[in-house]
Length: 394
Image (cartoon, rainbow, N blue to C red; front, side, top):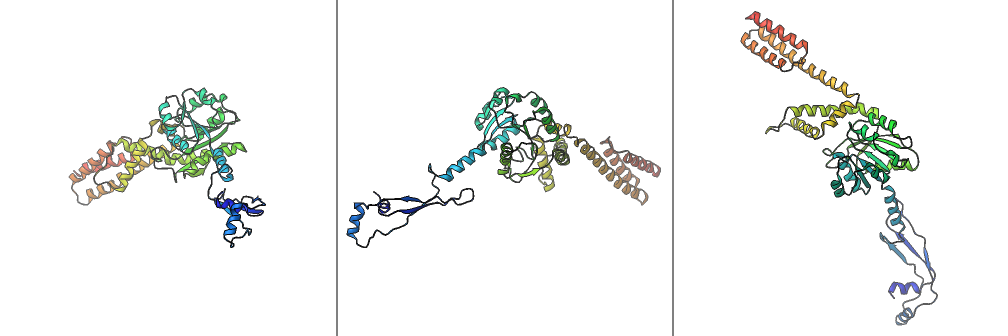
């Protein structure tokens, strides 16, 4: 028998206070005192008492403190375990391409059960990631995922959704998408999905390239289009918490407002990036910071498929207006350049410069204008006027 057992058996009814030093959900838990009883001291303790008269059987309170003990009776351990289980979701990804795989890595890392379905067989890739892949959509739906995460391309979304066997899912399934346009999937979900299904429209404003170093600080836009109460609202919260845990800046916004902002930011960025890519820009030994920024824009946008860019244009009604604004801005800039050169040429013509030099300047201006046949008529008219003036001077 150990020393502490001997001491415990010699005391009369007393309290053993067991206190966990680890807080549970932010509150320190105190366990109820447990009483022990033994009316007769053991012979071992009596022998020790005879050897040393200084020992006595005075009542002593024993305090036993457990430091983070994960034992079967550990209340805190069990509650934390139950909490972790409650936050685990069964998520089915439809469209297991580049972006679907990008999201799946984080979902698996957080401990969620991830299923995947795609028309292309990504079984081997899914297996390495810890994802269960189903080539057949019916088999996929028979697993009854709590959340369907639509990661198809924008232009393929309607055909994928209309051919999807939603009748094999539970009637309270949550449907979410991650498309770069929002009004289009919102209206499509409301039109195609049964009214019992919950709908959450989301847009992670990042991708495999911009989010490869982590999602902290990156915006995540969402709208709860149709979400039930109680357990269904809790499930929606748990799904959004996946991105909040990674440090995303959570922005709740209507789909219409999202598309207005996205046309001004995302579509313009992709347009400029693809225009610059047509120029075959290369790094130089004397790069400025601004030029390096342009090269990064080209790198970020050219990594996405043209289908994505086309979808941003086709399925966002605000994109056409932004494209027209971009064209008008470019024409206005050319007009400003031509107008400035017009003033310089007039000064050269009428303040003593040689007509030869003036002719060369006008020829350069004409070459610039001819290289852009879509130029504005006012610029062409100015060139014609200056050319006529030079001919008269000659």
